[in-house]
Amino acid sequence: MAICIGSLSVFIVCCMSMLWSSASHPLYNNGLSPMFYEKSCPNAEQIVKSVVQNAVMKEARMAASLLRLQFHDCFVQGCDASLFLDDSAKIVSEKNSNPNKNSARGFEVIDQIKSELEKACPKTVSCADILIIAARDSVVLSGGPSWEITLGRRDSTSASLQGSNNNIPAPNSTLETLIAKFKRQGLNEVDLVALSGSHTIGQSRCTSFRQRLYNQSGNGQPDFTLEKSYSAKLRSVCPQSGGDNNLSPLDSITPTKFDNYYFKLLVSNKGLLNSDEVLFTKGQGKTMETVKLYAEQEEVFLKQFVESMIKLGNMSPLTGNRGQIRTNCRSVM
Image (cartoon, rainbow, N blue to C red; front, side, top):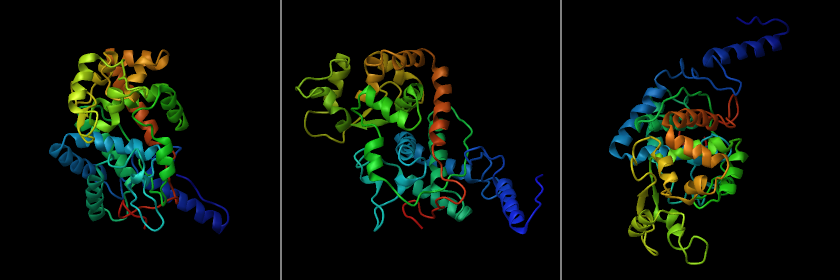
């Protein structure tokens, strides 16, 4: 146990530090801990899991939607729940950005989780931590791996529409753009491929892949890297005009199961989005070899996915006295 000696001011600071550590021991060097809510809200993770489980049982697609929310939040200002903030007199919501508008979903599930946690542990569990737990549980409920997460994040009091527009990769991104945007977040090419594997669950709207079917290079020609029968199938779902919200699975073999079929499909030139397929067709270096490895060895992919998700979730957290604990994830207190 630490011993506090010296002046009164030193004694107060030291003891406050001890109290903080006892509430969240053991603290990692980023201020987060797997035991953060052990005393203040011991059932926090179980409450989140229960709501997520019910939501995924009602709609399997919700697992992918919640997982995607973590990416779209953490790529802007770090993992601080800025994505959840609605428009207000002082906030321009990230929900209005090109990557999120009419696309990001699952906010009502987050609202429900927050409501349940406020009943059990008022003003205790941050929206930022809720999302990290919900994303992990979404993977597990889809048959994917589980992992220990560190908690103690606080919620931002600001949002960044510009950051959302600039930092989140678009579905038609080139490989160079993907690598650059992941590098900006401290994520390398292995992280890029592993985290792209989250597309083994979920669906995408026609507007996200239409360009590949009809006008890939702006010359009225399709993307010839697409396997022909798969391309024809996609055209039946996504016409050249209309049907913007028609959906196609990102993994056409096991769209609700968290496995490595996403990578097997990339190797077969059946990746739905341009940002998926370029990992293989344009990745003559590390990304191509990593795609091949994950297509052949699922356990290697799952292990790296966990490591990369932990890395993603620990980016630039607000801890200590920074930020706040919102009582409503949609608004600043």
